Image 1: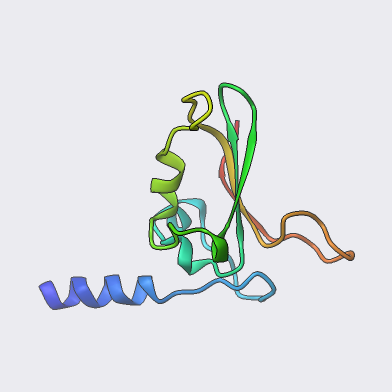
Image 2: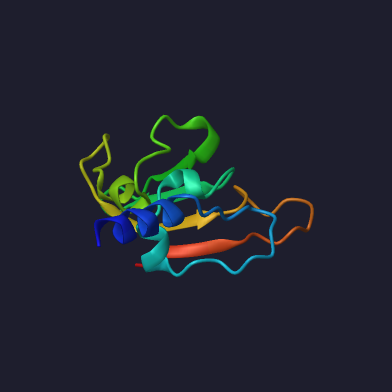
Length: 109
């Protein structure tokens, strides 16, 4: 029984969604349960509920790649103490060169 749970956890941990791939994207609930590392080269866009400031976390440049996406959203904004009002994973920071932006909306206001 424990071996099956560990095997399922390891399989989930090895999943990867590339920013330029064609593989179907996970649901918001599934994405929240994945480590940020499962989205190589993606950006996590977080908008603060209190001050409205937008923060962008780049997966390759953050030290918190092993944290679950849901745990990253649970952190309060250092500037004002607000929570995440809107959040989404984006394949690119902005639309670049006509290439569509793949996105997973995690929280909508």
